[in-house]
Length: 286
Image 1 (cartoon, rainbow, N blue to C red):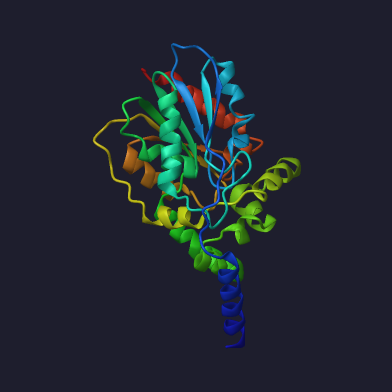
Image 2: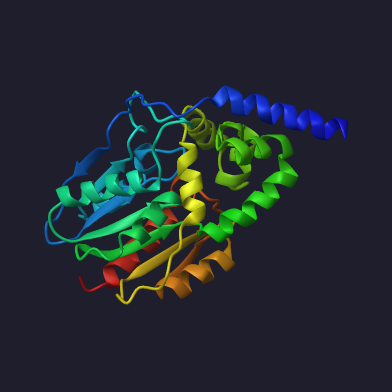
């Protein structure tokens, strides 16, 4: 009983400290464009939570070398100050608008390459006529995230309870032990992890986003959109069963990258992933 009371006291203190939503300004979305062969579709890279376009800085080069025009999206409040905070009035629909507005700025057909949250945003934009295909990297459906919550309560009881009750995920995502397990595999070099941790731990996400994601419902589309589902063999969240659900939803193709965790594009095996995506792209008739 004393332990439960102490836990509730910590949660209540955290909730009060988080305060009410503010009307503060945050930096607008950004879009980095890299030119290529105009006869090829543009590849639009969309980052996940606690990341920005830095996650694709190296990964995009394999595609540029093959001639693909590449665009890197930075969701509002991620790339520059002022950044988004847990109590910012921003959610899934605002991030979706950021990507949609970016697509409007790019001429011709596009293939969306979304990581995690970025994959969900790509799914939500699948009906656009200018979207020719989707590459879903480590994309968790809401059901997978609910299952993850149960594990987190067992593994990180105090920090995960803070997150569930306040919506402030920093108690988890700013914990190196958590990001080691849920973003990377045991094969990731210490240098790569240290660099990523420094960036991840400086970022925040709004509580509204996580509430919105849990309410999302995705249904099979009547449109036959070419889709590649990219899984990491060591990802504890987006497992093969989640991949199977995505395949049923999209009728897509699954590839699994060996010795790779959730952040596939930052792993030492990222070139394997890039090569598989390029092979899939080459087989499509755009």
